[in-house]
Length: 321
Image (cartoon, rainbow, N blue to C red; front, side, top):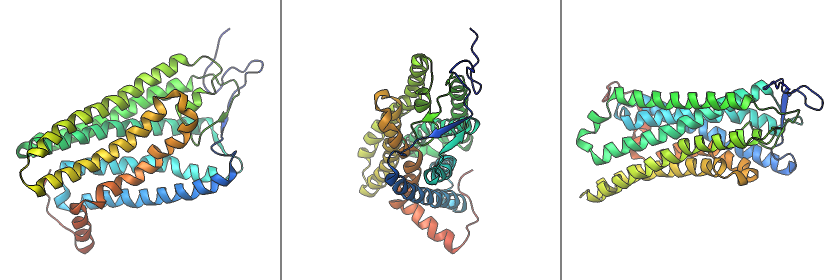
C-alpha cells in the first residue's frame, strides 16, 4: 500500500487527515491556567524590556562596542525572537476555550523554535570562546576577536540553527498522524508530536537524540573546557579587582549556560521524562530569555554606567569596528 505523508496523512479507513492540533497544556487543571497566564505574561514583559534595553544600550554607548557586547546583543535579539515566537500565542491559548493551532501554524512554530534554540546553543559556545580569548589572551584579545571573525561566528550560529531546523521540521512533517491531533504540550515540539504518530518513531527518536547530543552536549562540553582554562588564567591574575571582574563576567555567562542547556538536556536527552518536560520546556523558551538580561546586567557596572550615560546624552565615538 502506498503511503502519503504530511498534512494529508493516510486518508484511508480510520486514518484521516490532520488540519489542526489541540494543545492540551494543563487543560486538565483549569486553576493552573490562570496562574501560568500571569507568570508567562510577566516573563514576556520582563524579557521584552530587558533584551531591548541591552540591544539599545550596547548600540548607543561606544564603550560597549566590543566583541563581548556584540555577542550579547545578538543573544538578546535571539531571545527576543524566541520568546515572541511562542509567548503571545501561548497567552491566547491559555485563555481560550478551544486551544487549537493549524497544522501549518504548528509546523511554522516548530521551525522557528528549533532554529532559534539551535542558534542559541551555538552562540553560547561562541561567547565562551570570546571569554576565553579575553581572559587568557588579554593583550591580543582585540586582534583575535576581530570584527570579521565575530560576524563569521554569529552568521555561522544562525546558519547552523536554520539548517538543523529545516531538516528536523521536514522530517516531522512526514509523520503519519492518522487523525490524532491532541498534543500534550503548550506548543508544538518534536517529542510531543512524535507521540501522535501511528508508526514506529524509534528511528526518528534516535535521530533526534543524536542531533540533541550534537547541539547540546558538544557545545556545553566545549564551554566547560574553555572555562577550565579561564579559571586557571583568572587565578594567575595578581589584582584582586581584576580577578573579581573576570569572575563576575564569567559566572554570569555560566549561569546562563546551566539554565539553558540544563533544561534543554532534561527534555531532549531523557525520553522518559516527557510528561514533566512540557513544564521544563517553559524554562528554556520563556524563563531563560527573561533571566538572561537580568543575569548579565544586575552585576555589570559597565552596563549600569552605559545606561545612565545613554539616558543623559548620546555618545558619538566608537571604539571597535
